[in-house]
Length: 305
Image 1: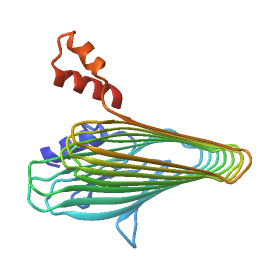
Image 2 (image 1 turned 45 degrees about the horizontal axis):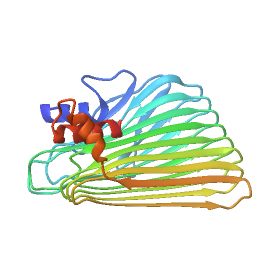
Image 3 (image 1 turned 90 degrees about the horizontal axis):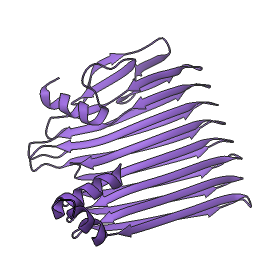
Image 4 (image 1 turned 180 degrees about the vertical axis):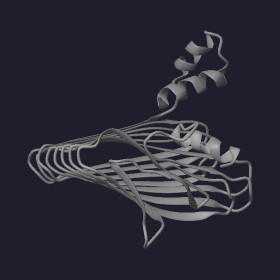
């Protein structure tokens, strides 16, 4: 991998070297490095671009890295990755995509990640998106995540997009069986003329299932954001969605939460708040020696942590 690709890899997966455990590293449309373990197998799909990640029942304290980097201007790809996670597992999965585009043609990565999580398993899933390059070509990412949670399983999902992505549509859908729990935390910042759409749909089908969707977003300059969150309570369950956003300059943000109770004991809550940075916060930081721009940056960075 060249230096640009290594920098992208560090940004989206925190990798400075070959990771421990299982991994599949994809660069410019091809798999460039792969490793499996005794408990985790990675198999290339035969019918379309993508891989199957198979994690044996009982696998504990292991990780899988599957980052994607694009440094070739004009490259467009669609990848399908399926995760089959057995019962009684405890694993961490690190994904993410970085695009460097210094040309005039658009570069685009679309991906569908489908999770089939067995009973009593715990999965932490981290997905980061990052863009760089000074070309006129767009950096476009459209990730789709499909989650199927088995009985008493637990998934923590963290998605981060802070810089450099010109256009993105992020779609997440999940179905939960009895006792299953899902926590999704999104951190998103747009600037310039970037556009971002985040869409969530969660079906709480099992008795005692629960979901918590949390979005922290900042829109600067002329960027546009749309947040959609649907939670369907189809049994005795608990669901909560929360969107907190900071709007700056000439940006626009829409937050559209929707909750539907299809059962008497479905307890569902939604919250949404959009506002500018309070003037007293900036003044307080400026009294400590920061400029106005530095104060704004400090507040935004703290908000997105």
